[in-house]
Image (cartoon, rainbow, N blue to C red):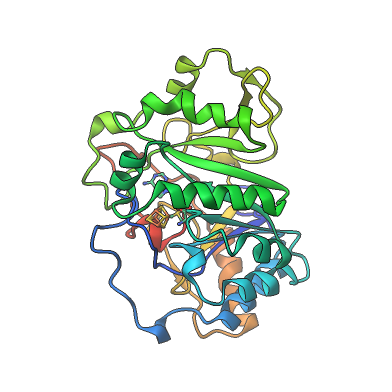
Length: 317
Ligand code: SAM
Ligand code: SF4
């Protein structure tokens, strides 16, 4: 369905858990999340009902996210059932990759068509620093498992952080010459848990173009990234700019959190609960949420933090 500004909303991001096996500094606090009561979180049946309600309103693309979706014990069942919902044409999943080795093939068999894997650095020490507890080797094994499993597309997401990984723009982009994957740089967004990041950390996507003038523009694929390619590469370099060149005017998505709150915009404080509702109840709240999606997310920079009221692990990115 279309919202009040005429945008066609056809994409739902479903967060299946707030929990994560990493603690990325830009995403969540060091102490992890204060675990909510089990009965306050959506059940698997409620998640599937919400996907059915969304599909009945014209949502055709679903992304499973988190927290880390692969820590969820019933993740394969959620993916399988969601992929079978009438009207859902594409199920994708975003993960930090560390738990992929045994799960990549089963996820593909469950109907997940595309994977986005987060990786901000190729340096072991920097990976351990930014994730606070993660191992680069585990993430790399996960990426290899994803490539072997034969997904339609594997994309690597790197959050671009001044003073942290801007010296790796070239090395990260080189992955697109060696492997059949896209590498996408995402501007750092100022969420609540952004204490580690001062003004200098927030660098614009154009920094990538300055470092790599040889990048050649390629046709957009319908996503939010501006796409480029290194000469001779087999994958694209994508630039995603939620801060410096926001794409709110063409935003096509809504979000559902693991505790059952529909968010019409990632950075808006507005939330609408659907936990405990039947199909008609969920559908009618969703209709309202889509129609009332805000025009844009408001000013975002180091001094103007997100109004989301949650850290990113509690929304899903
Ligand atoms: N755990 C999974 C992962 O890391 O891919 C899925 C959830 S994570 C919240 C989804 C995406 O949000 C990741 O690509 C992550 O890098 C990104 N993200 C988290 N906090 C961010 C921030 N402050 N600015 C930009 N991207 C952020
Ligand atoms: Fe976990 Fe993903 Fe957030 Fe990192 S970005 S803490 S992996 S949810």
